[in-house]
Image (cartoon, rainbow, N blue to C red):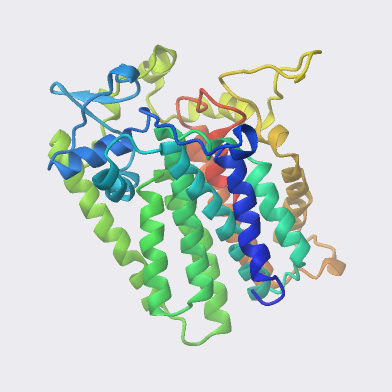
Amino acid sequence: MENIKKSVIFFIPIFVWLFYSWFFFEWALNKNTNNYNYFKFLSFSILQGRFDIDCPSETQCHDLVEYKGKYYLYWPWVPAIIFLPFVAIVGTNISDILISSIFGAFNIFLIIILIRQLSLKFNLEIKDAEVILLSLFWGLGTVHFYMSMVGSVWFISQIMAQTFLLSSMILVLVLPDFRGFFLSGLFYSMAVYTKNDLIFSILFIIAIWIFLKKENKNINYHMLIIFLLPFLFFSILNFIYNYIRFENIFENGIKYHKMDFHFKKNYINHGYLSFYYIPYNFLVEVLLPPPFKTEYPFFDYNPEGFGFLWNSPLFFLTIPIFVVYFKKIFKKENKNLNIKTKDMILLTGSFLSLLFISLIIFSIMGTGRVQFASRYSLDYQIF
């Protein structure tokens, strides 16, 4: 990491982890178990050779899939694989919150590495203090903060997905060879089969590949094929997983979902994914302010959440970047800004990943309730 001292690189994630693990709030680590972490029950079932789970009585099977008298998860399965060794050793009474907090803190470490690598490769000249501040912002100023502290199935999937996505990006930058592209493809596949909408993160990775190809003649199209091989393997596994459960390789269980009554009407009228939901979801997840009040802590709780821009106002600084980017696209840029081709490659990949991931998210039949701010926005905030 050159100028950044190694002690600082490790200190920042540890400092953030003390928040995530509740230590700074309770002066003790939160080792509680969360039975809404259905992934651990799927891990337990896999160890027994099956894919249905025993419904935890405390959850009343909330948000599960019921098919032919058995209960299944509709969430992708990679987090259950990650939980396998924990469940094999400890059982289902593992500390879900502690594990989630560790993954969340590790994400901060990865953010530091990613920012530094992007700065070096693209000559962004991001100062060491700025790297530290940006990583602290990501760790404590976005929805990543509270999502790392809960330990339920909804939040763990997104936290782990970020771990895999960040790892994939870093590996392409650090190891621009066949080995790096294969490992990057492996983590990309894990990210997609943790959160399916992250399939569009490949557009940003392709942008990095295009840049690397311009800089290094050893970078070629075969590396993209190597990158996609793990994804092909994971997709075949997913088809088999779906077929064993529902006799249909394309069925993930959504149509058998025991969904909350809050979503039932929309699902019947418009389905799980529909452009019909975009205006409302965009309003709530991006623009809507939290409900304010005159007493401390001066805002009220809304289970629908509120706009991520209110939770993380630093993202307002991306607005001038969009302005400059589109001016460049339409040949109206200020020559003094010195926007180079490699900058446009990175910005285009980032913009396209942001666009398509957010479109998927805004097309989902719900905003992500129950939540603080907008938890779904975590999937695209990195871009």
